[in-house]
Length: 98
Image (cartoon, rainbow, N blue to C red; front, side, top):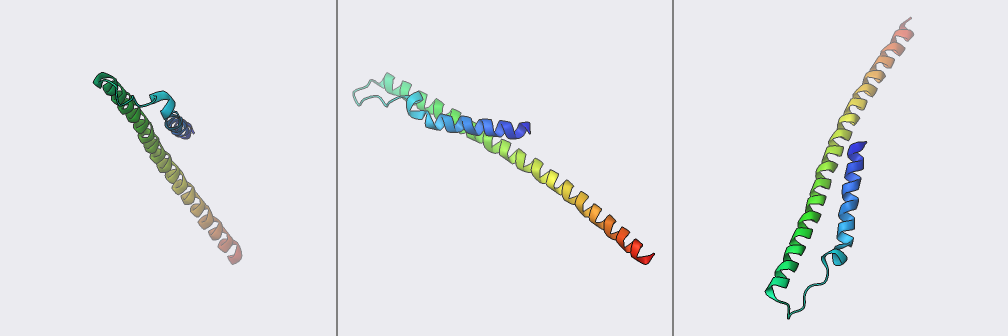
């Protein structure tokens, strides 16, 4: 359950980061901006993009882990169901023979 919560939390964080891009990064400097201002803006965009990409990468990894765990649980439950079906079928056949 915790894994699903973390996956959802990272996904929502990524969506908030995407939506907040214009306000957090800010407007692009004017054409008359100095190289230092452009470099600061470029670094800010690069850092923000890296953070956003990392958040979505972690989300994808967590989603993979959720899928693996769910698949494992499904296979275990399927095996238990099949075993129960076989046992009940054998009991029915034994009752018919009596």
